[in-house]
Amino acid sequence: MEDSSPNLKLPSTNSQLNLPPSMPRPSLSLEPSTPSPTHIDKLLNSNYYPSPSRAIYSDRFIPSRTGSNFSLFSITSPPPVTGNSDGREDSSSAATYRALLRTALFGTDISPVDKGNLVSSPSSNQNIFRYKTETRQPISSVFPFGPDDDSVPGVSYSPVKTPRKVTRSPYKVLDAPALQDDFYLNLVDWSSQNVLAVGLGNCVYLWNASSSKVTKLCDLGVDDSVCSVGWAQRGTHLAVGTNNGKVQIWDASRCKRVRTMEGHRLRVGALAWSSSVLSSGSRDKNILQRDIRSQDEYVSKLTGHKSEVCGLKWSYDNRELASGGNDNRLLVWNQNTTQPMLKYCKHTAAVKAIAWSPHIHGLLASGGGTADRCIRFWNTTTNSHLGCMDTGSQVCNLAWSKNVNELVSTHGYSQNQIIVWRYPSMSKLATLTGHTFRVLYLAISPDGQTIVTGAGDETLRFWNVFPSPKSQNTHSEIGASSLGRTTIR
Image (cartoon, rainbow, N blue to C red; front, top):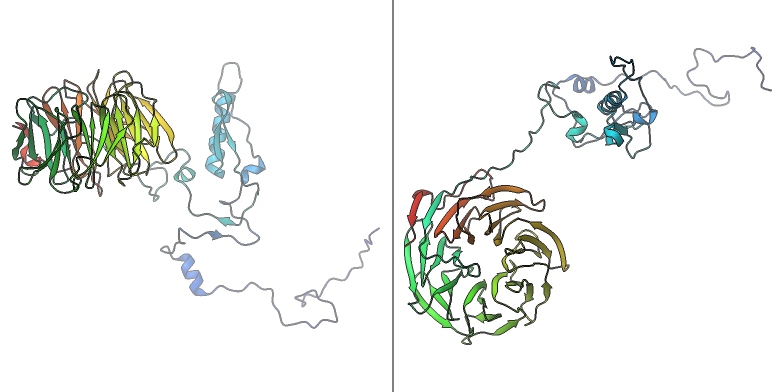
């Protein structure tokens, strides 16, 4: 049993440390030291703020209020009694109020529970006291009920970014007489030199978007017609696919035909360039790889489709070629083989709409015809199907924006609309209408801001749909000096 005798000696008031008698007593003092005037001035100075990127440490014996997890105390308060006629309390409202109040005071999370009640759930950190405060907090922890300009005077926050608005009407319309209403053709393309090429009947016309000058490039004669046009990636060379199965190469700067290539037995409805290599797809089910530097008609033949080839697109790194056909198949080829590397057969209608993403390597989008109506996304690197979006109408064309992660689709039966999508959410940013026939043709300007659409109503319509790379408020000036409706020939 411990000795509880009162005969205890207290240390002398002059002693500052309770040390054994044999130990010498140094001249120490436990009186609090006076902070330096400079330190006090910094604390009192209204212009002195801690760095927002540094953690704030409390005294080692005093926990930080903002960093501590007070929810582990399970602090609750009796719910208020409402003025119901039966005298019972409104437990749902009381629970919601307590949860929101605790969140505002202690910064705990709110999670939904059954019957619409809200309860606060403690964070994953099980320590009640903490001695460090993280200075960077989400806005929801500062304003758990939503930011309000008048809620905390002197506190500012970043405003919520408003969605970008897309003008719903075209800024220019060109009449395009004899523009064919044929789903399997590709009659419009926009060059890197800002020149638009359009196939009208048996002729090809060029429209300079900077000067609005129209030039007739060629006339194939009464026995032939234009089925496809495609600009080389750089320079002024234009490929023209004909109904007789030939491919002509034209120098648009001189309006002179450079050469004519044969090899197909039927019409050439799809063209795609990869540097000096030109790929041509035909109704004869074949794809011919042509090197315009070579004297040969073609260097290789790709066989894999069972019906007409109506879509061709090279990837941005020029390593993969995607082809779509009337056999409802999407095939992916590489540069070294004559057999498809990947085969995708999920579409239930012809695949003409094909687009490679400029933002994500290996991301490929494809669209199906009237019986399919879907946009599908594929990862050719992992050979996987990423997702599907039912658009409700025939998908005629697809094109990615090179400035933002968005894409545009044009449609035929039955709505004839143009849709701008956000990726990957696939939420609609804008739906554009105006064409009275299927929107079969699509091309994008070299600055990536403007698209041109063509339809069987024999019109070309120009729309500002994408932002510039630097600012989402900057509009393209292509054709701005010639607003209104004119004709391309």
